[in-house]
Length: 179
Image (cartoon, helix red, strand yellow):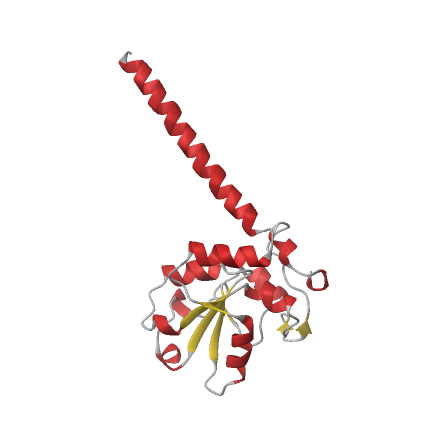
């Protein structure tokens, strides 16, 4: 076989490998959108270094006097639609430098959330924290929080039930009453 023939075969196998990798990634994303349980499992699988926190446990922590710092890492439009009461917005620059550092975090636990957990777990793994044992992502994100009927506030701090769906596909994980 000529050198040119070998290069063509290698190129074909390379392209096939890239297409297979892209299809597998696309399949995993579509699979994660099928149910909240599958989305949460996908976040745990894709970000094993990030620590999940159940919504019920966060609700308990929010009642404790030492409290929690809540960081919403969704886009500003999503944050303005609704948020967990007391949450800071990374999009609005509420956490300077984008890093969980300083005296505030030394005393409190940091819980990062987004729609279902992917962006928050990724943010945790990409950020150096001086106390990683105190940094968690909200498992199921604000979607799970809202689906359970937990409190949300809008841009003015008024109670709301509506959650920004992120996009049409991910929004399918929201109960009809909160869309």
